[in-house]
Length: 523
Image (tube, rainbow, N blue to C red; front, side, top):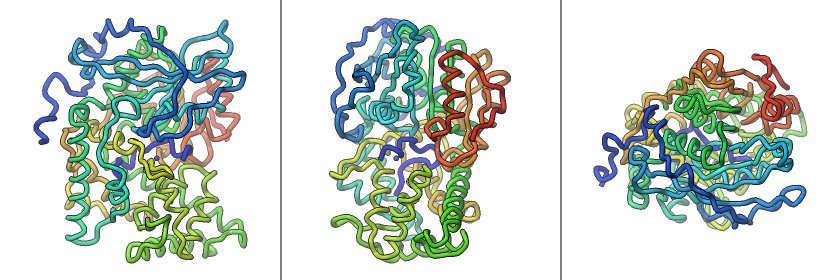
């Protein structure tokens, strides 16, 4: 059972994605008050960071070894930055935010720090940046590469909800209920999850939203010694960057929004758009399989026949799960999550084909492994806090709360948008229904009059952040701010897609300030 809003999922997938006591009170909400943002915590802006060699990632960050040195021997350094827990009380309690950096290779020509957010919300920048760093070597010639675990994530006061065994059971549960009894079980499980989050992280839940993360970015800019923010945002990171540009338009230096979220969409609109996006990606996957003829391992001579095979397999799994790994079975929910995971990148299509073929033969191990990657579970059975943070940030950001009756009413519309994913995504509208903290906005305000130009790059085959969001972001930023670049290709995110055109365009912008012509198209 996914915990996240489907419309704002992690771009990290290539690397593996008492209520009254915590209600937000007036004056300490995660709101968009520009004046409060401008005041800021002045004393904290002068703090000195103590950088040292990075340790291995924590369990909440996903675990694994410490990051390896970069070409030329540059080591990754880590530090903690103090930030206000509540920006309405800048002299009150502080929290620690974990940062990582690799110094620029040409210090004589260094421009500043380039800060990355790879998406989620909930993804760890401490693990994400080293994973993708080889793609940023040209950018590192003139920038220190910097990323961070946003508040509530990983090493930065991580939100905790349920234990590993409880999460194993939670993600295996049916996430598309068919009758009243299943609806009650679905709702009860959401309630149990939310109660676990409140019990373990109740004090942090009101403060983990995107507006406070944007304020953290500006504090980070000051602490790192930059007059302007240099920013590289992917997926949810584009929303975070848009909120930053709204709050601090005069502080924007050079910024890239890649795999762009539609900032005008609420929960329902965004989730429906993503149902269509993943269906398009599945259609493209199926057409590719058919085009390879006898090499394709899946039954069907047309994309529709392959889709029918997949829906049939999912229906069988709902009736009877199959063997997965060890004692864990592949359930219908796991299979759906595994398919979603593989559609984030065209490079994962061969694994999707193999996983579906093996599941048809009774072996669900590969689809289960893909589902685990989506949910942040490693091979030892430990979960990162990716999904817990994702839920916490989504639910404090968005006001919408759907009950079972309202979600069920949306099923036909969602099923029409995606025969494979629509029903599951319609029920995901309930993910914040039991949350103990109210939401902040209907959708984020990203209007940024006076901001420097921002590169906005959208992919025509992006399943998670459909291409239409690119234009919506540009319109919302305002006249003269967003510069549109189109990537005609598959997958979530353009810069890391392998397109030399996209990389050269973005690198020229960051390294020499060259702004491409609006409407530039790359393959």
